[in-house]
Amino acid sequence: GIQVEQSPPDLILQEGANSTLRCNFSDSVNNLQWFHQNPWGQLINLFYIPSGTKQNGRLSATTVATERYSLLYISSSQTTDSGVYFCAALSTSGTYKYIFGTGTRLKVLA
Amino acid sequence: KAGVTQTPRYLIKTRGQQVTLSCSPISGHRSVSWYQQTPGQGLQFLFEYFSETQRNKGNFPGRFSGRQFSNSRSEMNVSTLELGDSALYLCASSPRRDEQFFGPGTRLTVL
Image 1 (tube, one colour):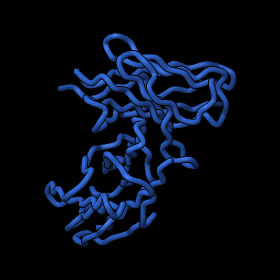
Image 2: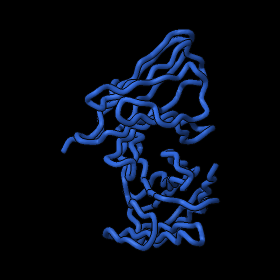
Image 3: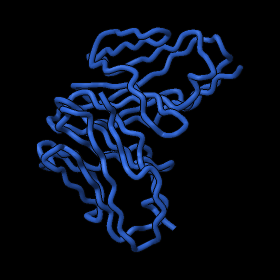
Image 4: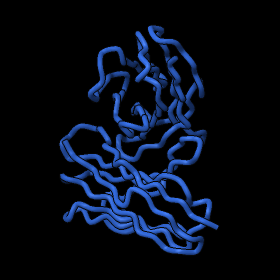
């Protein structure tokens, strides 16, 4: 099945810094999502981005499906951005089964 | 529109017992997926239901089962609980089996 890898595993930033999180997937994907998991465990939808680029405020994402990767950009980071970021990919195999990466744990310091 | 709801939010059980978790999807969503999240294994797919039928299944033992009702609400059941079943169980709904939206999860502790 499809493998999903995220990097870096951990990231510590000062407030106001920018960062790039990467998600690599081993096979063609139909769908790709980015999530932020809050301290209570809920996964918050950030982007649904099978291909192309999207922006939402200080966050943006780009998926290059032909090269099998997606990037999440966080600009002017805030302490509230802290948490774990996951990408999840849905392969083209025909089964509706999202595979999650292992996440990037981000800590933003004041 | 209300989001995905899961009940109960927290649960403590002992080994050997069974447990039933409930998930109500967003109105109009017909696909419900279940995931298990543990520190060691991360987020793993359990199964997906669509129109009351299990369409996909992950690599979990038969002790894990589920069902979906005609109103799209879903339940999952774990029988003969083991310590390793302690986890956050997350439910997600999708309108057309595309983008997923997650509930707040049920945190299960097995003693």
